Image (cartoon, rainbow, N blue to C red; front, side):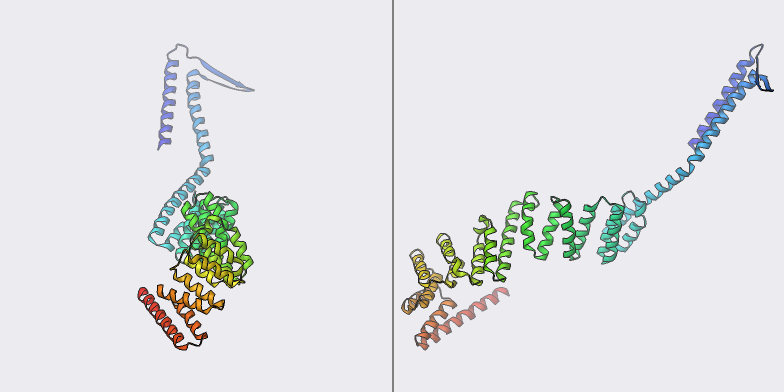
Amino acid sequence: MKSILYFLGSLGLATLTAFVVSKWLSGFDNPGYVLIGIGQWSLETSLVFFSVSLILGFFAFYVFFRSLGWFLRLPKQITTRSKNIKFNRSQEALIAGLVDSAEGNWEKAETVLIKHASHSGAPLIHYLTAARAAQSRGAFDKRDEYLKKAADQAPGSDVAIGLTQAELHLSGHQFEQALETLTRLHSIDPTHATVLKLLHQTYQQLGDWEGIRKLLPALNNNKILMEAEVKLLETEAFSELLKQASEKDSSEEIQALWAEIPAHIKRMQGISAIYFAAMINAGAGAEIERELADVLSVNWDQTLLALFGSVQSNDTFGQLQISEQWLSRHPDDAVLLTILGKLCQKCQDPQKAEFYLSKSIAIDPTVQAYQLLGDLYYEQGNKDKASECYKNGLELASSEIAKDINALS
């Protein structure tokens, strides 16, 4: 419409100009004439006719060349218009696909997104959204196909595509595949916050505490987790690694790991108990006996005390002497008294063993104390007292089991 108005306006202006020039020249007594000669040819006409023809001819040539230019540009304009139409449709398709995904219409979302992805200004979003939709309906082959197409369409978007792939693998419980993808992304950008966070989640799902231990500095330095969360995770990681090392019954490996644990972790409640228990289970209790005694001298702990009593010492008399030194500070500690009775029994001192075990039972009866005292009486040939101790121990054990069952119910 605008082009037609431009044409009519130009035509009117040219006609008006020709009319004005014609009237102006006609007003002279001698309007003049024009003679044009080319070789043997000549053209003679009045100045009025020539001027009007010149103005109208200029307009005609102007219209001709404008039309010619328009026709030459027409194919490109048609192509551009077609692209714009397809682009607008792809944008509408993207919005529709996102809405369908939000509503749970996964298959419909896939169809509309993929159909218009090639004409979109953001094909990456189309393919990644379609991959999520395919994942949601369990079509893992289609999901992988869309992710591959996304990589082909946007070769510079490795991190975005990789993160989407890792998230989908994690939600599909494909932890090994997620770890492979995230390891590759971590090599590309070691400080990427989302990569580090997903790596942390993946290692936890796989139970890879060694991986978490190596990741801890990056999580801390890049503020992925709060300081308190990092310390908690650090404690959990080293605890689990100690437990795993204890299962291998290798005291060298346990000691090597203990040497790597930071001092502030070693001081935390329960960590040292895991280490000492692991060493005792590995048959290396004698190696940590002195260290365990030193820890107990500074930090009195019932768990550590029980572990000290279970050490197969190379010097049982020395072990007994150390334990009796603690008695002055903890005279009414039933666990310590039980351990003293056990050690006295090993040292062939039944009288002191009976004294310590009886006193322990009087303060706080335990199944272990009854068992040890019963064994002592049995060795002395006093079967009646031994039977009574065993009976009391069984009754105590039964009552404890009943309490546990009631607590669970």
